[in-house]
Image 1 (cartoon, rainbow, N blue to C red):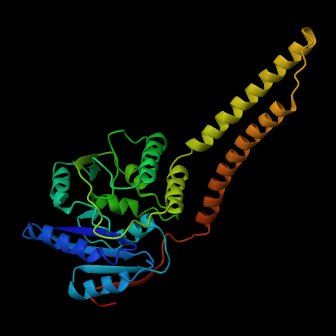
Image 2: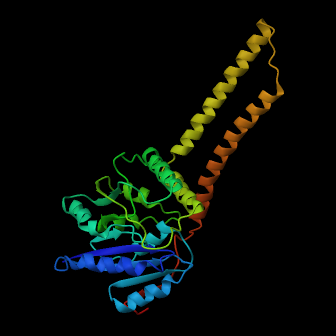
Image 3: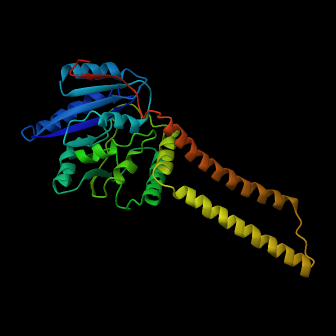
Length: 312
């Protein structure tokens, strides 16, 4: 009998997590003769009362494991904490808000049975704000440019991966984990299944602009040096542009007596190029800062407590 491990990072889901786990139980009951399962819920220092709810669920169901993190580490780090405890042959990633269509679980599983390493949802319409849709498209573009991800592949919040993928992902011990990069550098054998994302069971999402920006920076800097190469190219182009412009000015002044005047245009040019320079210096500083934090062994997450079947 094969085993599935459901990994659910929990934040602000006091009103939804019971329904999510109940739906998992119902879907898994359809193939109870083929699959056993466990549910690993990670409390990412949620500000609501989701932890007592999770502890009650663990007391009621022996296959529910609760991981309580000591500080808010972000969704991807919370998932890594859940990965460290999985026992299953297949790992199912899903959210705590009920938006993942659990009735499509076996459609994803069919893709793995046909030989794929990862099967992920591909939503026809994302149930989120226009700002988040823009952020998702920007992140998808960044992944294609930085990671070489094909256009037809898109990682969503509902997916299944084989155990060896998770074992490989767990070898990444540095802070700032970025799951899409970690998964894609492990395998390109990925399938997508079209489906419709559902509305949240209750409440609103807690993925703020600050968290979105932090996650985007993780992907932008963690798995590629292309931004630094871009900085080199831009610096070279600016140097060539400056040399050509200076050469033209000298020629016009020597042979045609035309002097370049206008303090406004000069100041604008200085501000423009200084802005680009400072941006590129900041980018290099971001890389250096992350290297510094990594060599100081900053943890991805800190587990305060693990509750299995109602026992510590």
